[in-house]
Amino acid sequence: MNKLINEGQKPQKGKKAAIMIHGRGASAKSILSLKSYLKLDDFALMAPQAPGGTWYPYSFMAPDHSNQPALDQSLSQIKEAFDSLLTEGVEPSDIFLIGFSQGACLSLEFAARNAQKLGGVVAFTGGLIGEQIIRDNYQGDFEGTPVLISGSQQDMHVPLERMKESGILLTKQGANVKLLSFPDSAHTIRQEEIDWVNQHILG
Image 1: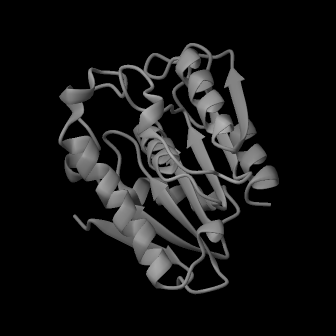
Image 2: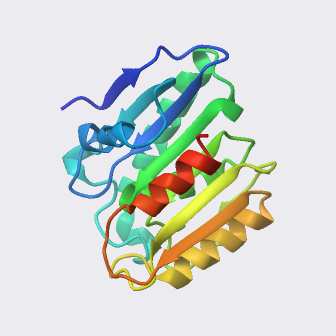
């Protein structure tokens, strides 16, 4: 399976680009299907593929050592995609990170470790990775980058409290964070989340 799938527009200076990161057990191809719902027609799209369909083996809140070396390798894979866009002339402020579930966690983790002015970060059901959030892992200034962290108030994989904690840390890093939480228990992407992203991040 390809390590990276490219779709949409050709990446170049002055154009927008999105790195789309799939969840556990899914694929690069599956996360790209969101282009039918999100306003991404004018974007260069890049979707990395996790080896074996998973970015790290255990819960994102498992003891830190248990998800190594897979987590560091996955973050390196996202960095390769990000750096390749920079090489093509795309500005960081025109790059968006979009992920679901495990991919949402990875999106937030990569962004917070390398905080800078981005186009936006969309974390559909995700939070920063680690048994505890370690502030020293994160550096940089988002300079007002819009960030969505969304999900269920009773998700069995991603606790609401971790989503809140993640939002607080990113806010301290200069991000403009929106937390959307829903009373249902569904582990999914809701139409309300799609609508919010299209209006406030991609619009």
